[in-house]
Length: 297
Image 1 (tube, one colour):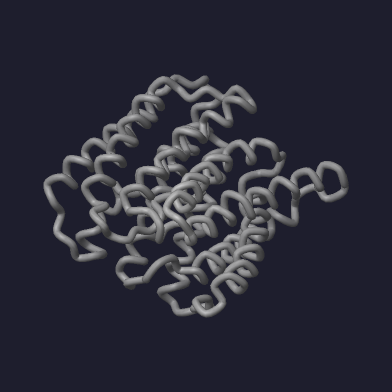
Image 2 (cartoon, rainbow, N blue to C red):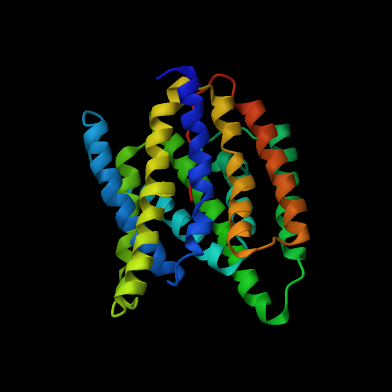
């Protein structure tokens, strides 16, 4: 793959990720049901794709540590879906991009790395950004729903940070292919009761929801990682990291165009601070080193 094609493919990755919130708004299912159905499609799609495209590299690893990593992957994905249905997509996306905050805090304990001064400064800025999300004015009846959505978004970021740290701790090379497949099947396992509770009697409604779940599973959660794997070797770590910053910018735009969902004023301020932190961290950290994606929708 040429350099230009690699950059173009890497550019499509955050575009696909950014469509998650918009597609989720097109279904009538609750967060658990939608998370389960989309993960089922994603697991089957990735399993087939990895076995076809990366046959020599793909094999299932059911060790306890790999299952733990898969669970963090699954928990982050599910919390993202739940959060996006309880609060604005902008809140969810920016809260998940705060994963570097948890890596900086927990890294010294899990990875045994020394905290640097720049890490402390970036953590402080991220905390300030996160605090801004709680300053938005919402109606009294929406307060609890919004608060739960924000908390789930923060948990999503924590789980993704744990996922990245555990990968680093186990010295995974490249992307852990089987972890993605196992993680999606784990989501299906604990979301199965909700998946079976959806209304299947209305053929038209069920078919519509199933279609969008399939699109979510094979698009933002499937094709994006196929593109990522093929493009990462042709771009620098800094290019890959910065291109991924497009996702939190595009996600709220698609949802606004679809349902006119407008993020709160403090979401713009807090999200902007977090985005600046991500860019600074990417510039400081990505000096010719291979990286793994810092987002998952």
